[in-house]
Image (cartoon, rainbow, N blue to C red; front, side, top):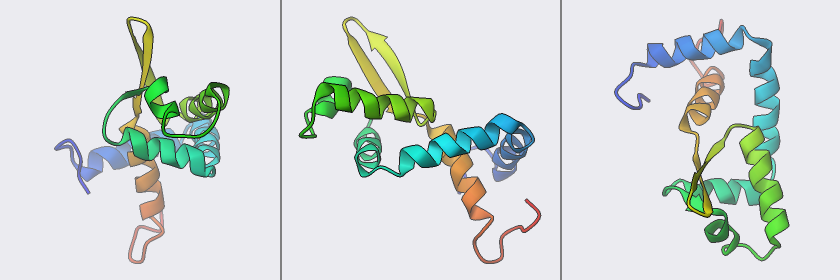
Length: 117
C-alpha cells in the first residue's frame, strides 16, 4: 500500500534505517504495549476520524479523567499519537508514520514476503 503518493521503497528505506538503530526496537516494545490494551485501541479508533480533545475522548468512556490521561500518555510514549495545544485545550491526533512502520514490519511475515528484511 502506498500512502501520501510516496513509493513503497521510500517507506522501506525509512524502516531499514530505523531498524539499524537500537531505539527502533525499544519503540516497538512501547508500540505493542500500547496496542495491548483494548481502551487504548478504542482511543486510536476514535482518533482515526481526526484530532480530538481529551474531553471529547473521555466522554466516550466510563472512566475518570486521570485514567484517560494515563492511556493517552502510554499512546504518546509509543509515539502513536501526538498532541497540540490550542487556547486552553490539548488535541490529540494519530501519528500515521508509526502505523506505517508497523505495517511494513508486519508485512514481512505474509506469504511471499521478503525474508531478508
